[in-house]
Length: 72
Image (cartoon, rainbow, N blue to C red):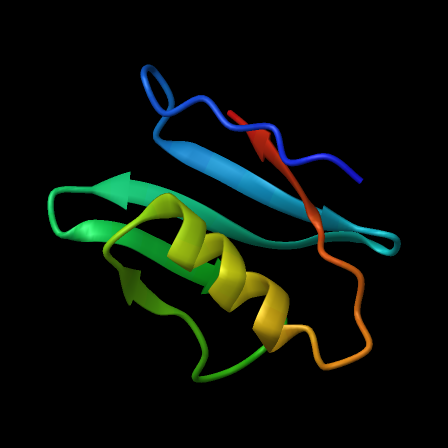
């Protein structure tokens, strides 16, 4: 799987796993906000895009493949 990243003009990335979209990352003034779909009480804000991507991957569980991140 690939990690498509465009930090110059994009403010949103959608994380896509084998079963479809699992979450998103939104760039803001305070960092990168993670929103995980169908998971209550999860998410948070991270200082870098890479740390936000890592948080999404970690939330999927220890055996999950790293999702692809599509810039929108």
